[in-house]
Amino acid sequence: MNIFFDVDNTIITWDVKLRPGVHEVFTRLREDGHTIYLWSGMGPRWEVVKRFDLHEHVADCFWKPLHNHHARMEELGITVMPDYVIDDHVEIIHAYTIGSHVPEPALPLDRDTVMWRVYDEIQAHVSSFRAG
Image (cartoon, rainbow, N blue to C red; front, side, top):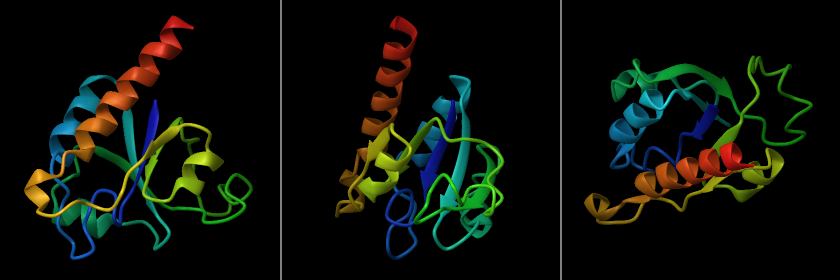
C-alpha cells in the first residue's frame, strides 16, 4: 500500500519533536512491503526527513491538498494515489476513504503510543482486505 503520513501534529509535535515510535513503525511498515510518503499543507517536508533521518523510510514528499483533494493531486505533483492516510484532520481521511485519525501528540511525549495504534490499524485494514 501507499501510505501517506501528514507531518505537523501527526509525526512531529508543534515544537518539532519526532513523535515516539515513528522510526520503528516506519521500519515495520516497509518490512511489511508498504511504501511511505509524507505530505503537508506546508509543502514537501524534506527538512523533516533530513532532521530526523527518515531517508530510508520515505519514498517521496508532497504538498497535501487541503480542498478539492482528488482534483488537485495532479496540480500538486502527487504521482501516486494514497491507499491509506494518517492525519490529525479527519476531513483528509474522509476524502481518501480509509485511514487513521491521530490527535496531537500527548504530553509527556514519552507516553505517546499513537504510532503503534496506527500500525495496528493498518495491519487490521490489510487483514480485512485480504480476507475480503
